Length: 261
Length: 339
Image (cartoon, rainbow over all chains, first blue to last red; front, side, top):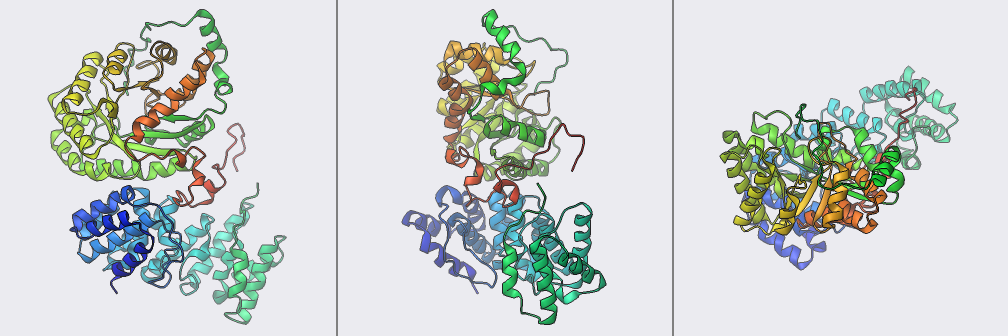
């Protein structure tokens, strides 16, 4: 699929005539000119919010993107189609925050997505919240290309930073034993420090129960936090009837305070 | 940036406040924030890469809502292009993020500083990558550029960067030299005019009593760096504002890796208030004039920071929970227990 065509259609739903002309004129440039257009986009394209977004790749959502971000993604696709890998690397190396966010969000639509694996895992290493989220959330790239080790690192970092794991695409499909075990270790560390983990993270364990995890679920059942109790009940139900609790976990997807005041 | 340990004496001021004023200023030394309640500040010159998160916290507490970080040298020369590239990237990336965590909007100016202009082989490479960075969001000018030793190489790259600024319609933040300042300042202005740059697009930095008149007379912005020992003291600053009024004058801290004070602007505002300067004049020299000068880049939107950063949800500067609460988690510095 030529993603740029579909993305352009979506852009034109929101762009005003002046913006459309700018996009049209820039799209004819070579890779170097396109790279400069990528950098300059916010000077010419508004931050209008994309609503009722189309969905061109499973798990890739443009919902709530700003228009300048989607235009940047469009330009990245064009650079990729013109084999402008050098220019893409230059953009990654010199990226400002919003540029980095657009670059990572665009990874699933690139011509050779697997070539950018190191960029993606570097984004997971980033301490800039929005850069981490640009690869982790509403982005199918990690589920398609990450090794189990890289995947687990991303999910754990997400939990460690008290971010909402349900925004990770492919969470269920890529769940694995090693992740469940490490989650248990991590929860023990938090408990030792008098802290907790968000209740919804226990959705990662039902398929991988062992003695250790059973003890954890028992502990959750006896918690005085109603959300932990619900999480324990859902794990037990899911073990009994796989696939039966999907909707119920949503109750635990609301933000919750992790640290006691 | 000057670190001469033998030059500790404060330059004698041409202006002196009254004895009573001086006495008041000494008494309130420790609670200056009582005098700046409700004020907001814009510091157009801070090298935050060299500062700690404690400084960001203190800035936020003192009412600094936005700042500009000019590119400068790091205390020792860089040896390759990659270090420049990574430094410029950090000004638009990591440092911007770090600042946002404290609710402070971070802008920067990008340029090849005068000292490193003297390594011509490297300077040529740096000039190649400058346009890419100058076009980035939130880059509000070319800076800090100008003269240090006033060598031929410094002049060459100062001129080349003025042309870049002109072409991209960006303001220029001009560093004036520590040594031979008066001549260096005049020369910097003359060259800018020679290149056909509108003086209101040029911020001449690190002024003092000797340079201010000519800078203002020729239509440039005059910035004053409140920096212990080597540049301006804030008592002298008060006298300058009394003498020249607020037009095209701005104050900055130039806080960096030297003995400098990131709270120089709020402290100077407090001193101005104590010494009877009108609140509106204080607002102009500690906020509005810097904003107006650098907003000529088209890259500053006051509504992004005037009510705090968390308002701009579309930008999602750091989508984590730290900012949503409006404040980073606070540590009680006096507590022995660390949790």
